Image 1 (cartoon, rainbow, N blue to C red):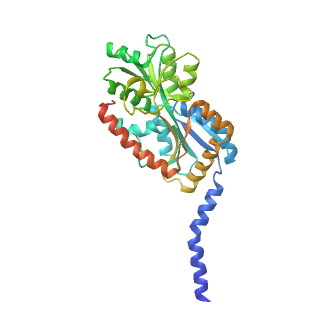
Image 2 (cartoon, rainbow, N blue to C red):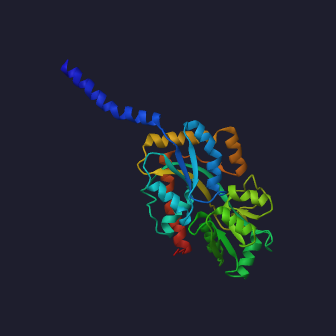
Image 3 (cartoon, rainbow, N blue to C red):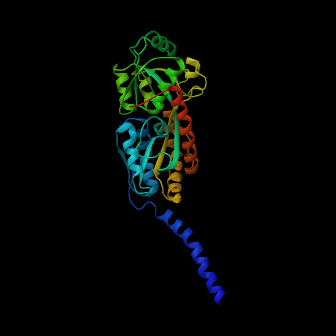
Length: 325
C-alpha cells in the first residue's frame, strides 16, 4: 500500500510539468498582443501585419494591436521585443534578412543570436530593381552603363544603411564594379517616395511594397532579384539575366520574433495560428497578388535558418568591404 502511494505521488509529480505546459498553452493569450513594426506605414512588414491582424485577432480571441515603432534602421522595435517579458505578448514582424545582416555592419543593443526566439519565417518576396520613370535608363543594362560612365552619380535610395535592400544594392554594385551613392531612408516606403518623386535615381526594395508603384507607372521596373522570373512581373528579367551576376538572389524574408525564453508552447500556438491565417482563402489570394511566397518555418527551424543567414551575410559584408559609421 505504501509503495502504491509513493508511486502515485511520483507519477503526479512527473506529470505536473506537462499539465502546466498544457494549461499555459490553453490559457494563452489572456490579454492583448502587440505586433511591432520597425518601419513606417506602407512598407512590406506593415502591409503583411495589417493583412493578418483581423484574422489573428479572431483566431486568438484577444485584441491584436499593430504598432509602427521606427528608428535606428529598424532596431528600436526589435530592441523593445528583446527587452520585453518572454511571454509572447510582444512580437515584432520584420524583415529577418535585415536582422541577419545587422550584426556584421553595426553595433546593436541586443544579440541577434541570443536575445530572441523565432515564431516563424513567414514569407519571401524578391527585391525589385526599379528607377525613377524620368531617368534615361529604361533597362537594367542601361542603368549599369550609366553608372559605369558616371561614377558616384547614381543615387540609390535604401531602406536604412545595413538593411537587406542596402546590401542588395551593395552586392549589385560590387559584383559589377560600380560606384554609386547610397542615401539611407527611414524605411522602404520613404525610399519608394524619394525615387518616385525624382529625388533619387533607383532602389532595390521588396516586391510587396514596390510592385504596385511599378504597375501604376510611378516607378520603372528593371529587374527582379529572385532566381527565376516572377509570375506577377513576367516581363522583368532577373538580375542574373539582366546583369549576368551569377547566383544573385536577394529579397525580403519576413518573420515574427519574440523575446528569448518565451515558452515553446506559446511559440507553437502563435505559429499554428499564423500558419492557419495564411491559408484563409482571402489572405492566401492577397499574398499571391502581392508576390509573397509563404514559407512558414516552425519556430526551431526558423532559429536555424536565422543563424545560417547571419553567417552568409557576414561573408557578403566582408567581400564587399561595407563599413557603417
